[in-house]
Length: 426
Length: 150
Image (cartoon, rainbow over all chains, first blue to last red; front, side, top):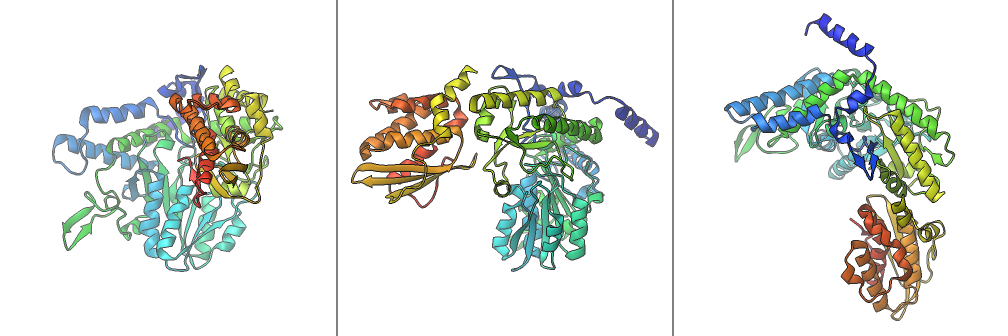
């Protein structure tokens, strides 16, 4: 596409209204009743749904051209390899990676973070070194660092958050020192929706240490435009299934020079240039980190999910979801028996459309059952962030998390569902 | 919403809001903890036995209406029973929850029947059985490791 054609397409997209009903029609799973009520899917932070284009791309791969990638010389293998590598290029462009060789396909964010912990963290950490996290991390950005600290004698520390659920940047800066080797934090909190200022974190880190900055982007990529070069971080991890793509596929982006210096994570086929019983030589990134037969069809589906997000427009998705968030906070503020811990009404930092709430006198688990009975899918629990729940002083919350296909009407249905909770438990 | 009324019966809501036998027990013969990692619910059972008789039984913890009411009703039902009776009641209650009708034969569950609605909500069964698994562990002498429902 020529530059003027791209500009014309962008302009056309921006001028068109965000047609949520047309978008909903792309998601076949939303067209169903649950317990006699139209499904209201508000569990997108756990896993989003897939548009037909993604489902078709995966199905089409298996129906027409699937074979192992990077192995055969036959036609199907070549076609699968091309499609798999084309998906890598799409993902690289989508996140602003300078080079598609910096995009490693993994099983998901969890594997991406474990890969960084083992292949970057382990060789760089010595006894007494420090890994600095935040109090709002998902377990997948805590436990891999605890494992590597047990192996190396490094210490894992967590920078505090404020009562408003924001990272305390001053305290964070104060914890950085020359022993800090890794800073790992969420771009967007899965439980609170807090958007961390990664650029500020990178700037503070660079000024006070030579630590690598590892960003868990699982909750950011589906909801806002992400440009890893602009963020300035060293690693960025995310999952396909939270961004309307298939399950079982994820991404680790890493700076080329860092990846090039890292040992493999898993050993096996597809990641070596030569194997003898005396030793093996490894391929360059990204293949070095993709041992074994990869998730070929899911990777291709992820490429289509990327195209879906791009054609819908991350800027417009973000605007739509921000409107849903404002509407939700406004209607919840009328319910004195609902609290939203870690989300001050005058919060200074940006928030993604995730609301963790507590209903007075009703446990989140009971709230979830009563909402489910009305067809409303939300998550109740600790959201794989037990240290955060401890910090907020609640055992669990009810979390409503929005996606591009949610509507204002669904927010109102959530509220009437909460009234039903109140009627039973009030 | 008739289904929900079966689940959240007044007796359950009453025991949730005002749990019976709630708190630590002193002196105590055995303790056991139950933990549901899925939802974070925790319960600690305090058991005092006099010979084979359950002399005292209390619990503490944080949980949903189903797990709290189940623990509360359990303490009322099991207090004063002889060990074999208590074990039979545990088996019968767990059988009721898992829909295994044979296991309940011959044991009158009495007031505990109010929890029978839970079996229609499979993901909530673990809430109702948490305290019972912990009680079984306590009767077996207590376990330093927490009982989990996973």
